[in-house]
Each structure stands twice: as structure tokens, then as C-alpha cells.
Length: 242
Image 1 (tube, rainbow, N blue to C red):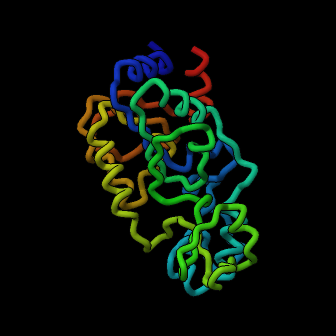
Image 2: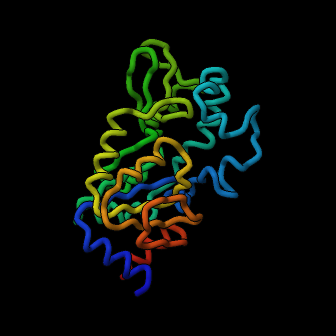
């Protein structure tokens, strides 16, 4: 049995599915990943720090203007649209108890139609004033100037994304862990599993089957039922055609 048929068999025989996805899920939508050979962190920085450091809380606090230049250039892609992976999962949610736990901040799962999405690291589509807590969507955020200033109170508007050195939301963590514990099938896709604490969540999985769709081999202690080494959106396109 080939990988595509085996994947469909595991999907059909599972009752509670969790899809745990990272940057690789969105690369075929034109959004670069971070840690691959061609990823953002391996590009030569055009600013006064590495791109990885620029996504830290201390850089945001100490170099606010440069942070926003970088953030708007590299973290926001208004032209990106859902690929075949996002679309497959949105359709699967209509038939199965499926939850998506994503490390991505692009909102493409929701754009494809998924409802059960847990965003571990926030979203570019939510922004809040650090002074009065007023919320702004992406379009509003982009209209507020180079350093986005809240018209209501003149506080700085910060994207609702988790930077390095910032904690994940406790309720989000709890919900993600509960869904993983309830799952009988865990699909891990497009992630290096190198970002803590998100990489530790899969240790809560007690189900029967794990599917990995990833370019590189992952450091996973549990047994993997199916290992797929090909581009994620391309794989789901082939599965959808069966």
C-alpha cells in the first residue's frame, strides 16, 4: 500500500485527529520558513541584528522602529492564500473531529475555512494597543504608521504574536494539550520541533498512530506509523485526488 492510501486509511479509521503544524505548512503559499537552508534565519540580515534576534522581546523593546520595518517586510504577506494542505484540512473538519494546532501566525487555516484552530504563537490578524487594549485588524494596523500608534490613546499597537522571551498564553497551552491527549491520530507536519514549549506538547499524545510529513527527520520518542518526506501541500493535493 502506498503512502497516500495508507494516509487515507489512518484518517478513516480515526475518531479524534490533531494536526500539529509548523512553518512548512505555509511555504507552498509563498511564506518562507525559518530554519531550513533557505529559511529566514539563514538569510543575511539587512538590519543591525540577525533575523532570529529581531523576533525577540528585548529587540522589540530596544529597537522598536527597526522591529516594525522588519516585521512588516518579512512577517506579513498579504498576497498569501491557502494551499492544498489548508484546504484539505478545512474539508476534513466537516467530516471528522479534527483540531489544528499551529505554530504559524498567518491565519491561512481560518482563511481556508477551518474553525477548530489553536494558534500557539498568535496571529498577524490581531493587534492590540499596549496602553488601552483596543484591538485592530491587519488592515487597520497597517494604516497606523511606521510605528503603529493607537488613535484613541497614543499607545503603541503591538501584533498579537508571541516573540522569543515571551510566554505562551496559558489557556492556549491547556487547550492544545487537552486536544492532543484526546486524539487517537496525531499528524505532525512542517516543523523542526525545535521551539520550546510547543515541541514538548506531542509528548502528551497517548493515541495509536503518528503521521509525520516533514523534510527532515524529527527527534520523536514515540513510534511513527507513517513517515512522509515530500512537500506538504503537494502531498495533500495527491491525497485529495484519490
